[in-house]
Image 1 (cartoon, one colour):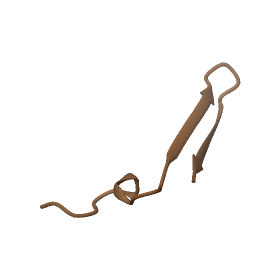
Image 2 (cartoon, one colour):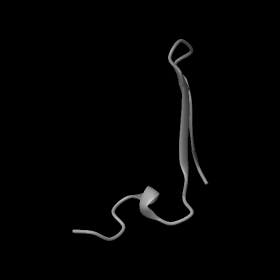
Image 3 (tube, one colour):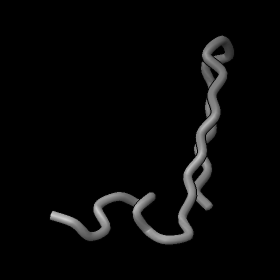
Image 4 (cartoon, rainbow, N blue to C red):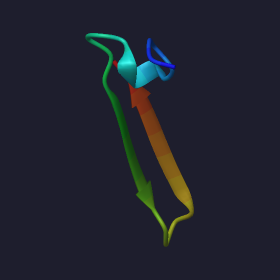
Length: 31
């Protein structure tokens, strides 16, 4: 296989996520 198979495989791309289980909310960020 190999190559770019996920957005996080792209050089310079970063992904973060935070959630609040009690409030049932969350946020994902792609930089």
